[in-house]
Length: 126
Image (tube, rainbow, N blue to C red; front, side, top):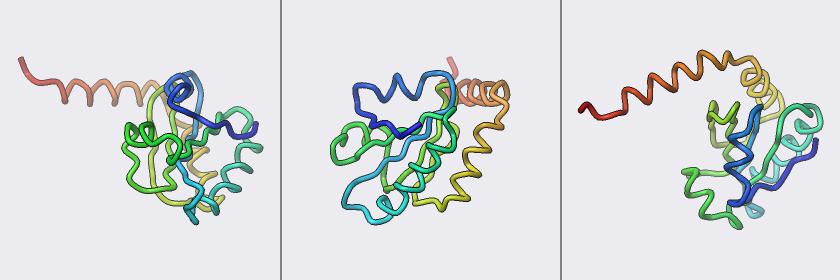
């Protein structure tokens, strides 16, 4: 599967769907982004079961702001609608492969329990 361009119109629907979605926040003027782009593209061809999305932070400034992007490139991984990984910086191919393997290996029941526990802790006591 090739990478898909994500915009404000389809970002939320894409990352909240079932399965794994990796998102590369990038910009044309960013040297490390241009280095990481072909690595991301190649990984998309090797993992047809994963959605690989790209967000151009220049064209989608409000989306980048909503995602709290402070540095590019930034890679985010979502699984079954839950953000499970976020890291700025261009990853070499072996590191990207490790991220993909780790996300595929997650026990999502445990992740959902952790998210629920964290949400409960953040609720103000009444």
